[in-house]
Amino acid sequence: MGKGRLEAFSDGVFAIIITIMVLELKVPHEGDLHALSALWPIFASYTSSFIVIGINWNNHHQLLNSVKHVTGAVLWANLHLLFWLSLMPFATGWMGENHFAPMTVSLYGVVLVMTGVAYGTLVRTLTGSHNLQTEAAIQAGAGRKFKISMGLYLAGISLAFVSEWISLALYTSVAVIWFIPDRRFEQSHAAP
Image (cartoon, rainbow, N blue to C red):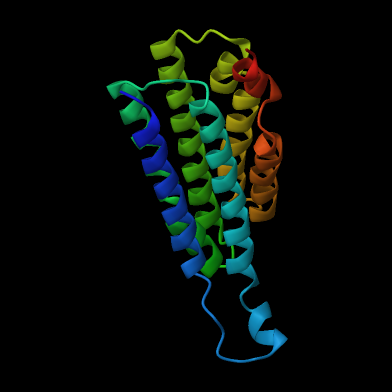
């Protein structure tokens, strides 16, 4: 089947996830800066998650741009990714509302890990169904960048009970690693 429906559905889910997250930012009833400063944990967690969702959307777009059709297995792998991404508003809201309490930061990390695992599964499923053996596709699914990310996420989950700020720094470092899509991946499907 063509990939158009998968892309349209996925884009819609990404948009809904972002919309749900922004609805957690409640407008204060007071009109001063103190009222806004009370919202900083919610805004900080929203900003972090918005960036994570944006990175996933960008990489998802780049990945699907390299294929012409999808299989049933790809549809299920994509739904697996969207499931974990759809939990981001809950994890984000819980973390922000509770001022980055250790358990909330740890759960946020679990959602990040599972999102990464699901993305890797989607890459491997697409690679297998298209016989995509490019260096970039292999790198995106099981390369060093993926392994480093999973290690940082797992460390962050554990360290949340020691220092939630260390965990958040580790999660942020993964976002920095993935912020710019792999240029080799872009070049592999831009070539004539």
